[in-house]
Structure formats: C-alpha cells, structure tokens
Length: 174
Image (cartoon, rainbow, N blue to C red):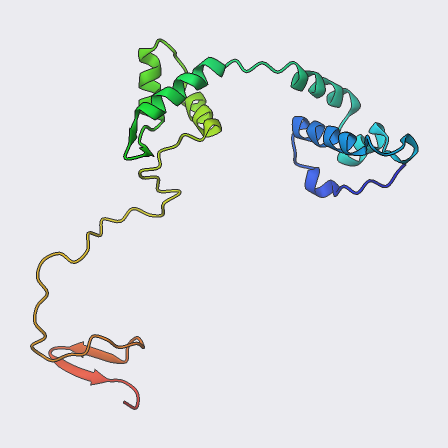
C-alpha cells in the first residue's frame, strides 16, 4: 500500500459526497505523474475510509446532479432584490416564503432558509448573529447637568475615586 499524505482524522467525519470529491481532486492532481508514481484508487479509498461502492455511487450522483430548486432559486433572488432598502437586503425567510406562496410555490420554511443560505441572500440590515447584539443606544439624550460639586469624571483607573452621599473618598496614595 502506498503511503498517502492524507490525515485520516481530518477526513473521518466527512460525508461520502465530500470524500468522493476529495478522491477525485487527488486523482486529477496525479494525472500528470507517470502511472507507476500515482496512488491507486483503492489505496486512497482505504486511507480516507470510504467503501468502493459508495465512491462509485457518489460519483454517479455528482455527475447526474439535477438541481430541482433551480427555478425557485431564481424567484428567491428576484424577491430578495425587490426587498432591497438603501442597498441592503431586508427580506427574511418568512417574507420570501409569503411571496413564493403568492407565486404558487409552496415550500417549507426549512427549505426556504436553506436555499437563501445557499444563495447568500440574508437580511443584512439587522442580523444579530452577524452584526453583534441589539443595542437601543441613541447617543446622548437630554441635557447634561452642570458639575456643581466640581467632581472629576476623567479617572483612568477604576475605583480610584468613589462618591457617596456627596462626599468623595480617594482610595490609595493620591
């Protein structure tokens, strides 16, 4: 058996289709080499942990692949583009699904979300997973009171000066 330079632990949890694509990529890279220096398909499959029948079955599926949602993807793109506001996508999967139902295309919400994820049309105006947490901060609101007590609010070290009951206590040697 030829010693393949594949880390089996990195490939162990992959699905059969992904493993098949890796094997095909290795074979394409090896085409320029003479046959005596190439890895045998059986050796690669054994190293990756993929059965020969599964490999050939997945190759057939990849070759004969037909996207049954091709027309739906076009409609989702149209709907998402119609919902642009200030250059950003604003339609989530529920609005897209409602528009698809108006076009007499009935899909489950999971399918709509998966297709939107494949097309990379997600709400970019506000998405708490991408833009961080929600914040209602609106800047300085109202008037700022005058500093009647002449307190210093520009300390750089925390807890150096603590104010309570209109008395100021300084901590440390300052």
